Image (cartoon, rainbow, N blue to C red; front, side, top):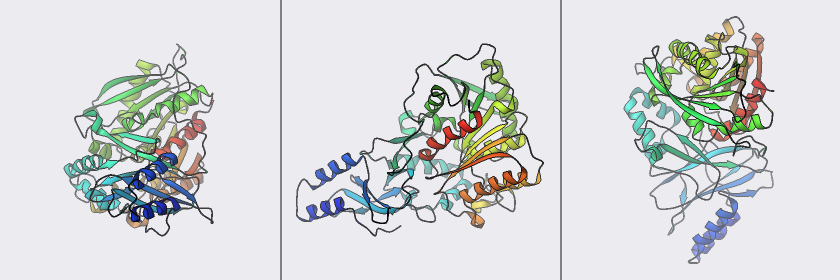
Length: 439
């Protein structure tokens, strides 16, 4: 994406620099602070000109956001104002309801790689971990924007603070301000951390159990929501969505379960429609939860939820173990998965599929008898980057919707104005829970 327009406030700054005004950068910083991050300027056609600004020393600065990425997923290189440490990039955005994350990548070679090139690194797991560490170390949020999204990747660094990828959230003027994300509206919810050993998978992982701020019946049989990628959701405060839905009477009190991944690579291996992972969730995790926390054995009150690969895993659990998981909440699920050798990874540790076509799981639903499962499926309007064979994440999710509808499933499909990040999932998770568990 190239820069074609210029913010009036940025123009003032550029002229001030040209005129040698010593306080030009301070005045711009005041503008950014007042704006709460990027400068937003209304355009005659109804779009919003968004100007992202980073102030700091660097050799190169890339803007990382699906709102401004090119067709291959690369973020634009920001322009440095000569003689200053000010970098900027402007882009007109027509979707006034957009909410999406962004951050700045400083002197980072990874920022110049396409999405496909990054996925190809999975042929060599050590390179994947090195890439992720480098991305975290070179990433900066917008210091002028108070709305941050925090993603924790526990196994990358020994020091806990360095595991946090902090990004900023851009929300345009017409975004729906009503949300259940934010500080808890009732006190008293608790989190309980356990280490659970799996004999089926031959590993162990952290499992964090959420108990609501209101008493649960002593008789047990509690509704339960099982969430994949628990570390990524808890680090951003998603457990408060549970509390706020319960506080507002939108859903009955339930037990929440956040499943962690042992490693980055195990996530990719286990969640790719693996029968062993389904057996772990259904035959080890759920019986343990019933015994320790009194959760229900009723599939109609058992929700499995996740995003990205976690969305794929959630749909797979509904397909393969509908006897346990009768409600599925998939956010931006990686339903493109299915073709062996996807991203030229044939022969590597991850084959990304089962046969010679993408969308393997969608095709299983098309040919199998209907199962007793209700679905919430969503994806972001920005998730259109074409992968192999021209399939995008958005098109794959639309295809699953159509298959499920044709087979007679109960399914609610939702497209949110956003991308593959927590800014969109903050808003879609509560909508999905209301649909699947509504009081």
